[in-house]
Image 1: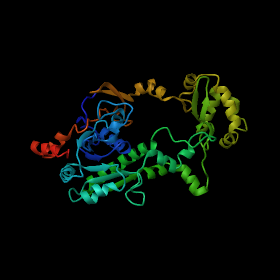
Image 2: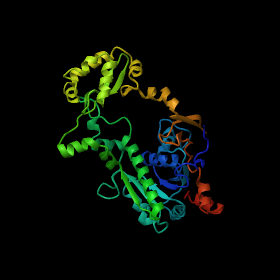
Image 3: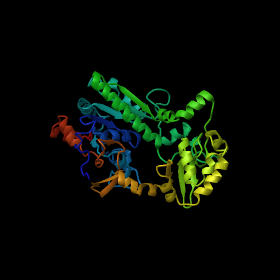
Image 4: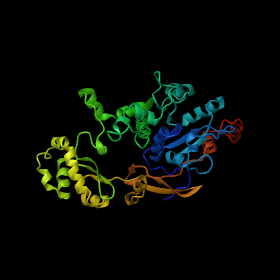
Length: 411
């Protein structure tokens, strides 16, 4: 079902209905966090800088190309800001700060993804806001945190992938260090922030006391090292890249060339190895002393790969998926277009659409969370300042006061 209005209020039955979040956010990681909160029913009011001369104002991602939706909107902006509201407000001006504090009285949380040295300067911490509302939750998503010598450093996903070792773990063994194809640290940090903020809201509802919660891109990136970190920290074992994007300890668990492409097979459990041999027409490999046990398959992985390559080359990727589906963990290796044009996405409702003023039937990916078995319904991201008047009227400002703020370029 299409939704035309931005920041739809039809969220009454969702888990976070009734929660109001003021989001001082830009670009990717922070908006990705509040996107989850908005999808789950929270009213997310996105606070954006007003236009100022040649500066168009708003989240910088409104200007992120190459695909635009008129002025001050883009496909990139829509991706991360569905269902939110937009308020333009210059919080650096005294009048803007006064308006912000009035809004804090109506809110449950204030979140930001500014550089670590900015929240204190802008008065976005719990210390700064507790006098206005003791229960307010203040959530901070930054590159390196609000303390330490890196707090003022600008930070981006790719930098985190580099320093946390992701590049050294990605790609073929004889190739250069390679970043992951998506801004995965931004997205994981956003999800981590959404969890931290929701947990803090639960605590505030229980005790009446708010707090600060901090998430950093760097911490999240390092935390994702998981078991390779445990192997190195405790056994000095260094995980290295494996051919064909293979698993560091399990074989076969990698890509194999088919007649027309590639397929990824994961025989993590013995039963999957046995099923694979049977379906490939190689049942003798199950009892072959070289391959009978996991350690043997790993030690003789090159010899095993040669045998499996020969078998997989006999059919297409689609044929092998059909043969192995439900018996062996398997997936086709798709290009981006093939992944998004897959009939399975339509079957599962993973793509939905709404009408945007500049693009009827604008298609987006659905939130991966289902509530009561149903997909969460998407609505478009807001125009810059689309909800300024409504939000300020609700906060008690008169039409004359709003006009004066607009004349002073505070909103």
